Figure 1 (spheres, rainbow, N blue to C red):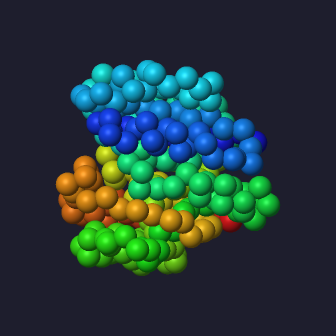
Figure 2 (spheres, rainbow, N blue to C red; figure 1 turned 135 degrees about the horizontal axis):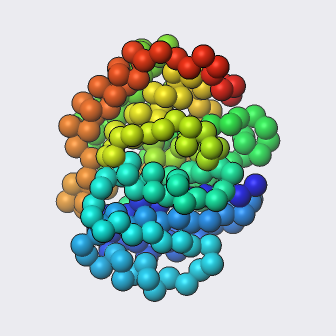
Length: 236
């Protein structure tokens, strides 16, 4: 199996070198490719990406910033693996957790795997950020009669063709809610594994806001109201 690791990047010159180093240093249980989409960065991100020499790395550049969802779509269109997972470049997620996401897939126990942040480590989280995340996740569970622990997690591992079939249209952070809503509407319940997480604050460049949470709930309701496909994919 080949895994495509998709990394959207926007103005991360302070972190991108470490993010790439960490992602490429992991001992993966399968072949990987790292597809980085520079989403119109205006700092030195592009120059740093141009200096990295690794056959597993491919860099695609957007001339203008189009949003996380748009960057992921570009990466998905270019990816060549059987499976995919998204890895942000902000160092909040640890790529060492990706092999743990792969375990239930390689064991045949799951097809879609989410990394569940427990928000219980030593990092000091914003109360409203955590409550906003839990609120969006609760909304999904109520709307779809499901029980997932972390809808907004970046770590969503699934077959590349499944993601393509979802036809995600959200260009910004709303893509997280759209992906989950469309999976749940098809009765695909993600298998969850605990992951580590280190949140950064607004002063460190955190981009998501309360408006993204409101948009996520609206997207979940919109997807719930749509008719379910006649032949849903098998759930795991």
